[in-house]
Image 1 (tube, rainbow, N blue to C red):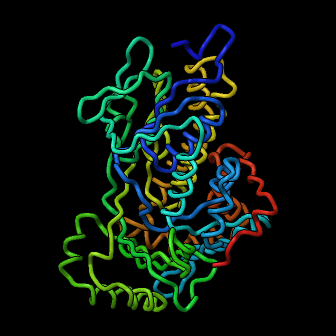
Image 2 (spheres, rainbow, N blue to C red):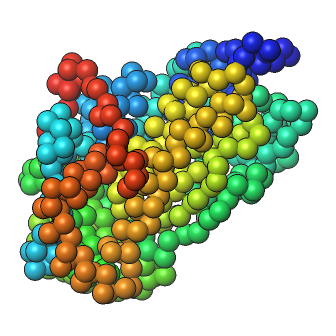
Length: 426
């Protein structure tokens, strides 16, 4: 096979393997195929489908989808979010941030994760130059004759590839093959979640949270229409220690419902739709740090590269930006090595900031350190009203910040006016 690299630089036509067909993997496959690269996607699940809880798409994530030409169908099934509000049990304001205070055309989008999956998966399946290999669970990477081979759980070898993109999630085993990992540990806290119908239309254009110390946090996120159906959905999140989930199950649903409704009465109609503990699922979070995000002919994207807790609501957005940044790096490089080095440089400040900020803020909302809850309640609301701090909070919420010491944020992505008309109100 003729190499896609030559003395005059990197040509199109790289044979690329993408491991994982989630947000980062599917977006990368589409973007790279459109540049003329041959892409094979290896997905462990034999028949992947739309599952998951509600997520928030920020302006950065929507900008990446717009570049892929996929924002329209996502907007049509999402719910516009104009405000993030967090109150204590007593009603004290912890956070009150409106997207329009950063820019008049800024907003978030509450979305069922399954909608994003279906839009990306269907686009990847239809994209010329992309081959999907579902039911192939890749467990090892090997470097052979300056190319990458991937090896599945049955020992079958696939490739060779000029480039391998690892995007198989926070629990990826493929980080072990390149020794880039600095940290890959599960958070002790996670969240119980449930998606129900907003039958009374009471959850309107805001992500609402109610907190009680650092041990109790309830989130209510308008989540659009979901992959199927016409009923508006809302996602409920409840903070929980992972090692306390069995105690929660043993305690019974009625006691749990009473606890949540006492904290936030508006949750009552949603909780009434929970019929069985099996309806409530556990989301576990990981703290993953790699340095850099690439090795020889392999690069890590999305949660496989930089998983965090969802405290800042950035996971899917960072994954989408990763995919487009990789395509941009390849488009302007002289070799795969140069492209991957450029990718890690390009993403260093943006990803580094959100990893640091998430790690710093999470204990103020989910931890056993009660004194942090007192500090949060006493000072965060005041900070939220301080002009400079408020601007940084808004910039962070929009997914645009690049670090405390860097003055220039990422630009707010442009959205075509015809797409803005597609946005559903919550």
